[in-house]
Image 1: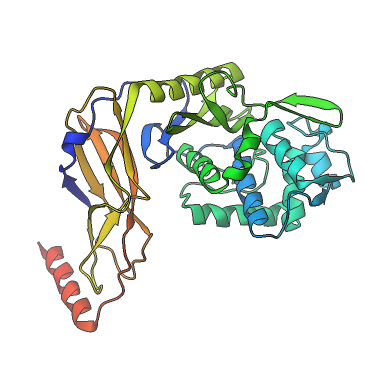
Image 2: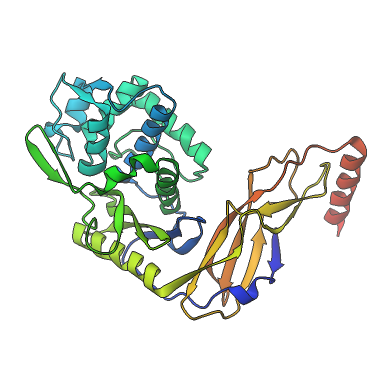
Length: 375
């Protein structure tokens, strides 16, 4: 259902003018999750080594739960050594077969070196096998709310059944920054040495003067070059995804351009404070006939600097909703348009629980729905 919503027209923006060579791209406001720019954001893509962000999310959750610690050591199996080690031809930590490696060193390798062997060692050490670990990745992906992803391994090595979207990759990056700030410093380390081999951080935008401090690059021959990157300047943090590029140089350049454009060309406004009601969604058969929709925290918009021209906005949800509706359920989306072009969107959530109504309420709403169907 689409509901015209014009009350915020005085606070929204003008035409967005930006293009990128990337096949897929997203620029996200970290605080609100609002999408500032998108290009095929919801089409399936091969995530390559950006998959390792989900691997890290599972690892950090296991540490938080107390099931493992950074000081634990995991065994380097023959599978990890052959699939992800020096003989594999891919990115590697150069872990020695049958050695024991601390979890912290494995984590640093996954982040800095993109070590496939390190990712597999973590997966096997936590879950016993990569397949079982992939199930944990998918379970967490569902919890985070990733709608377009499926993971089959911890590395991102090519598999036709493994896929994600640019939007989901940005959401994983946002989740890691928000939920695990105590580990985020690893992403900005410039290099790592293991087995007497020193390797630089594969994110070449670290320390180039635009505030980039994470997160992860990826590449396969079929998918091309991609990255999930974040920058913080002042009180503003952006997360960018670019993918499907032809070289490391092009990947770095397109990522830099997108982030720089987002920081310089836009100003941030907050038309809705945390907890402010954006609108209401109809509920049929519930104790209440509607439920308030709110943002996840404040809803922020990025607008071209100096521009407060009016736009249209809509509330979108698949309705009427059916109970039970639980507080925090994602039930809709605020979409902001300029001249009928979508320029930003932000997810909306149920502000309270709505339980199933009594028999009279359910019957009344059923008759209403039937009557509408006859019109």
